Length: 507
Image 1 (cartoon, rainbow, N blue to C red):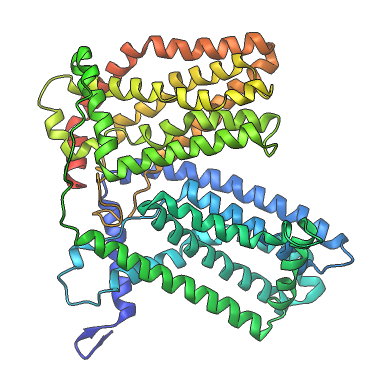
Image 2 (cartoon, helix red, strand yellow):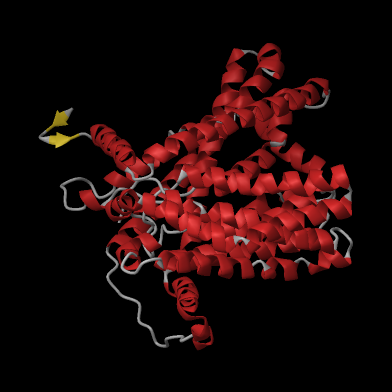
């Protein structure tokens, strides 16, 4: 609706949402994402089943409780649900870039694009996923004992809390993209949330649950003060996110300074390897000089250090979970960096196409560099060898299978990756979403498929023979890298014009 020759805010948001959907359809990765999205939806279906199962288990506990009501029991475990929600978002949901550039010179409000981004994140269907747990629990434990009105209060308050948590996630993700030191903020917040667990004379999980169980009485029963507090908290978080997104986007949009190199690292030790050495230099210097590549590398290294410390010096993960974390620890570099192979190179893909088979050397350099980087998690996990949590043979076998078939799968993404990722800008871009669902599927497969070999093969044929077979499988891929890397190149050349068009259009 037009008022005084001005478009209304709601009409503007609808128009921008339409533009975002069209931008996604024009994305170079749209067609290949459709199949991968279908796979993700199937996996989400399994997650829904798991959530329903947990709802049934929690409902049985709530129905047998004589001290707390069903709502109080559920709110007692809510901090754990919010923590899991936050972690899942960090693993599976990136902060999308915002479609800002085309609208900068238009006579619309300066917050218009940011408001559309906030609206999309608040109304995202991903926020409804937890309803697969909330609704079954409400049907089994709340609706018949406390009535429809309390059930509505229960479900609505939980949904608003999840929406608030989603905005909190976007705030943290945005700040972490600026500096990894911002990880201290969520650490402090969650330390405060879980403080009843470790502070006080009755500290423990019972005190934690009892503390938050009080909300389970106030919010479902429509306590005015409790609802004012929840809505006020939600408004504060959304407004803080709105202000942060505006400041981040427009600071990046107006950035004009260039990087001043005070010292150029020669890396002359790599000269002896000829063209391959030059591309190893390119990989190292890209990490040193380009903001997004550097942050991704630092993030991967930080995760490797954290997981190594968790596996080595805590008892949080035992038995089979220890092996899962070891596999995960080795796969982190590949999952966070190698799955995006050629995406950053899309900024200068025309230069790489000048000389024949340049890309073969580029792929070999990436493979060698990130395979050598596996020595870092190997060294950091030496304490688990001393403690006897994992055998040396198993650790070597997992490292080899990561360097072999796992890194091979990651590098094959070079065939289908055709969307340029910016080297330095993070919050603005042509496309509205950075998520490549093919990458997500490959990452999940790389984490879980090696577990089939690491966990079940030693069980079926014996530990020594099982890990020997895992190690041989990894060595087979490593020793044949001179065959499958050229195969990647040949397949890339068959799609050369399609990929180059995608790289150019997404710059």
